[in-house]
Amino acid sequence: MKQYFPTDSLVDIPEHPIFLGGSIEMGSVEDWQEEISLYISEHLDADKFCILNPRRKNWDSSWQQSKDHPFFRGQVEWELLGLEKAKTIIMYLHPETKAPISLLELGLHAQSGKLLVVCPCGYWRKGNVDIVCERYGVLQFETLNAAIEYL
Image (cartoon, rainbow, N blue to C red; front, side, top):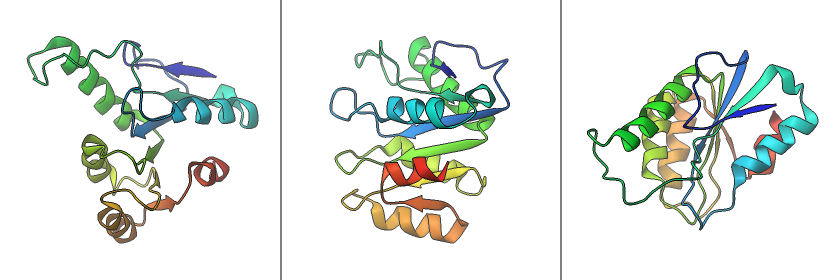
């Protein structure tokens, strides 16, 4: 199964791309995207799926958070395109993070019918997430494993 990262083109991707959105917090949150990728490659028809993984190994936190910074802009535009192209979006909101951009993405795609949200107890805005998911019929899970098993 192919994984696509922010430096990869998303022009020719397989029929069922899965975008892995949510908490990244480089260095302080486990690489949960890799866990999901392994599960899919071992349990699903990997030729039909691909992973759109926004975790950038060479992320530089000194990049200016500006639309004029080419690397930062490229990252954001890749993520927006990946979210649009995805047939499934798995959004994991780790309780030890805030993930404000993920909340923005949740709002953008709440009515898309392609979100699976993992929001464990302890996430700082769990109540807001629960209400949005309930209102728009977004499937929600307490654990990452439950979302993986749903696939």
